[in-house]
Image (cartoon, rainbow, N blue to C red; front, side, top):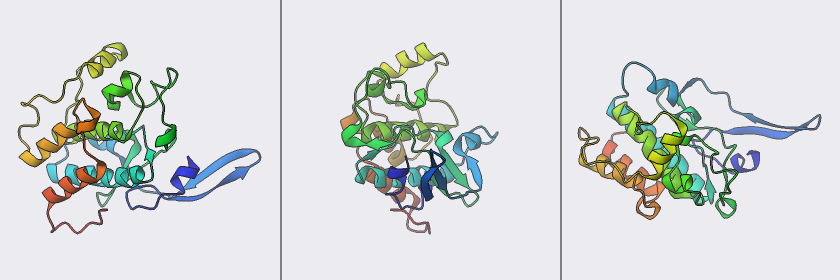
Amino acid sequence: EGEIVSRLSHPNIVRMLERGEHDGRLYLAMEFLRGETLHACLNEPATLDTRRAIRILLDLASALSVLHELGVIHRDLHPGNVLVLADGTAKLLDFGLARAAATSTITRADTVIGNLPYLAPEIVAGKPASAASDLFALGVIGCECLSGKRLWQSTQTLELIVEIARFEGLDQSQLQGLDAPIRTLMHALLDPNPTNRGTAASAAAALRGWLGPQENFYRS
């Protein structure tokens, strides 16, 4: 984890301060941040307003873009691994499952690694993780942020695995209250075919375009 994070420098990725070994144990020191997880935000009574949700998704897409450019797949993107600061900035946390794309082959033993509701259908089917599977997780988060509802109906593990494996994409009736460009993006991110999901950079560009030039935030 330390080796991966040490290669990253981005305002939407937690900054590593030091890593080393002490008394035979490896340690990793990261910046101290005040905020709450996106999971906590989603559990608050009021649903995130659209603009705030889009800003968070843009931050995450920007962070993933940098990761993917380095050939790194996060593999565990979910609301509990996202910290939202007081100013609304989202920071991507926890690279414990991240690994270089060249070594991302999924085995029978680690197909269940990660947070199940955010795993892509191909991962549930035992296929290799990829940048596209990170994008599917971003799409699931996006649905939750923009609708205030879970994407999946199942709550039991086996039933959820089956639901994800059989997922055929968003229904046209879902997310109807959103502008067409955002609906189009969400449908792409949640396409069952990984090759149709685009890239983190293209997702960031679409989100940035929706927010408009008046947004005075750093976005890569």
